[in-house]
Image 1 (cartoon, one colour):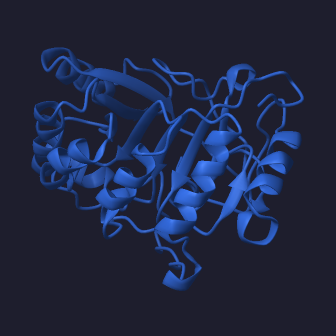
Image 2 (cartoon, one colour):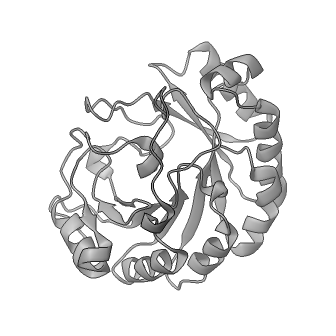
Length: 266
């Protein structure tokens, strides 16, 4: 599939929940969030059927996100169903890693190829501050479990204010080097203001090369994270929603006043 700018759209990010077991400062508002009713969340069958259509139209890579995808009950079953779709060349998950120690081997057996794990600091107190209460020992155990399960290359997602030379980022880079991991430095973003930068060590934020669509947990297909444009797959059906999203994919991200990282998937 090509959009109006001639970009090949081959990457689908699927948010499976707006719920999370952490409350990171840059993701969750201080006063909390209003959770979506379970009845509004796409079922696994709906997600799988949509993904089948998307793959038949040209999607090759699928990433499962949240919220925190591992809090979605039965997530390994969804992984198994998506991995069995002919044409899916890569299936990945982005996770905060807190539950990964328990899930890593099960996910690998279900067909998951690899993981991206959020790690913004190696300092336990800073981690607790950034995540509003998270335990970094659980994160580190999750990272080691992912390596042991063969979910490689394991990539660490590190949010930075402006530079990978910041103390927290330097610590993450050293941890990654020591443990043979890859690290991606993600500039702090603001959806409403339309502020974003290119990911260091990845393609995110490079609009000229953007090849992705995003499906929210409630069934809205978004052509761009930094846009309010979305198409409801439950109303339009998969094919029409995908065609509309491709047609309306902007040449460059603008701003988003109707969504948030926790319910779009970042």
